[in-house]
Image 1 (cartoon, one colour):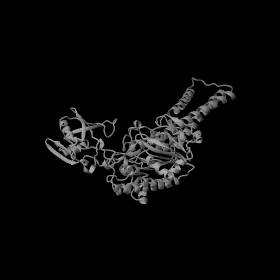
Image 2 (cartoon, one colour; image 1 turned 180 degrees about the vertical axis):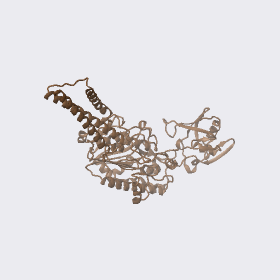
Image 3 (tube, helix red, strand yellow; image 1 turned 90 degrees about the horizontal axis):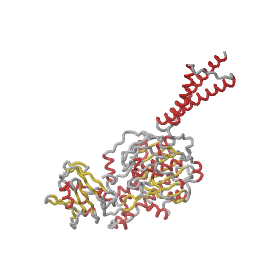
Image 4 (cartoon, helix red, strand yellow; image 1 turned 135 degrees about the vertical axis):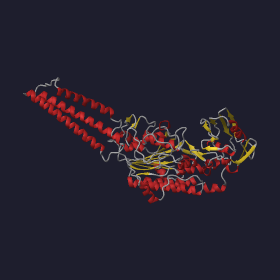
Length: 599
C-alpha cells in the first residue's frame, strides 16, 4: 500500500515541479521582453530571457526531484522506482532534458554580462573638435586665453591622439573613435562610409545607458536609441525622435550640420562661427531635455577654417605669402574662433554634475600648413585637360570617347611628387593622351607641367613638377594635331585649390573628471583607444575584438579597483535601427567635393 502511495506522491510532485517551472519560466520571459526600462535590440534581449528562463526551469525541476527523492529515502526508507515503468521513463527523460537545457542555456546565452555593475550614476561627455591641434591650442593656453580647456587639463590630463596611419581623414578617425576598431575592421576609408558595426552609444543603449548623439561623421541617418540622435555633416539633417528636428528649428532657426564651403568668403567665415554657436545651443537644449549619461557630438567648423585660413595663421610657411591687407584682416581668425569655442565648451561643462561627469575633449586628427603653391595629383582633373583639347568627356570617371581611365596613386610617396598611373581598357587613344600630356606647358615660361611621362599599351604614368602655381595667373597651353589650346590652369584644378591647411596624424586628447588623475601628461594614444576607455569608465565589459585598449594610466586607483575588467569575445551586432535607408545624394557628394574629400 505504501508503495502505491509512494509512486502517486512521487508523480504528483513531478507534475507540480514541471508546471511550476514552466509557468515560472514563461513569466520570466514575458517579464523581461515587456520591461519598459529595457533597451537595446529585441532579439538579443529575447535570447537572454529564454536562456535565463531555461536555466530557472531546469533548476526548479532538478531541485524538486532531489527533494522528493531525499524525502522519500529518509521518511519511507526506500526508493522503489521501476525503470520499466513508462511514466518513470518519461520522468528520467524529462530530467535529462532539464540538465541538457541548463547546459545549452549557458552555452547559448550571449556573451554579454548583465548591466548590474554598470555605473548608472556616472556621465561621460565626448566633445569632439574636428581637426583641433595642440600647435594652435598650446600658445593660447600659455596666454591664458582658453580658461575652460585650462581648467579641464588642470583637473585631468592631456595628450596626443593619433589618427589611423594612412587614413588621416575625419570619417575613418571618428569611426575608430566610436567603435574601438581600426580601419581594416570597420572598413570606413573615407568621409561618407557606411557603418557596419556597433558604435559606443549602441553598446551603451544595450545596457540601458541613455545617449544624445549630435553631428557625428558617418551618421547619415538617425538611429533609434534611448535618447536623441541628430545626423552628421554632409547630409540633410534628420533626427530621432523625428519630431525633434522641427522642435529645434522652431527654437533655434534652420539647423545647419555643416558650413557651405563652396565659396570661400567673409560669409563663409561668419557662418563657421554661427554654426558653432548653434551647435552649442542645440547640445545644451538636449542636455536639459534628455539628461543623457553619454553625450557625443562634434564641432566641424574648426576643420573648415583650418583648411582655408592656415596661410593667414602661419604665413612664413608659404613661399608666396598672402597679401598684407588680407593678412591683417584674417591673422587672428584661429585665435578668435578657439576663444569663442572655449567659452561655449564652458557652457556645456557648466551643465554637468562635476562630481559624476568625465569629460573627453578630442580631435580626429591635427592640422598643419600645406604649401600654398603646390597642387596635388588628386586635384588634377585630367579628364578636363583632355576635354579642353577636344576629347569629349562622357562622365566623371574619366570616360573619353567611350573609354574609361582608371587612376592609381602610389601612396608610398610624398603626395606632391608621387607617381600617378592612368589605365584604360582600350589602347587606341594612348598616343593622343601622351601627346596632350607632353605638350602641356606653363604659358609664361614654356616649362612643362608634367614630368616622367611613360606609357605602355594600356596605361600612362606621370609626375608633376614642383613649382610656383599661383592659381589666378597661370595659363596652360597644350597641343593636339597641330592645334594649340590655351586655358587657365584653374580650369583643370578643382575648387580645392584654396586649401592651405591639411591634416596631420597628431590630434588632441583631454580627459578630466573625478575618475581621472590630475596633472598627468599622457603618452600618445590611438583613436581606437577611446571606446574601450569609455566602456571602462562605465564599468562595462571590454571586447577582445576591439583593437584599442583603455587608457588605464589616466584613471585613478579608486576607479581601477572598482573596475572589474571583464572581457567578452565580441559584442553582438547591436546596430540600432536607422530611420530610412542610407544613401549618398548628389548634394552630399557636392559638399564633400567642395571640401576636397572626394574628386
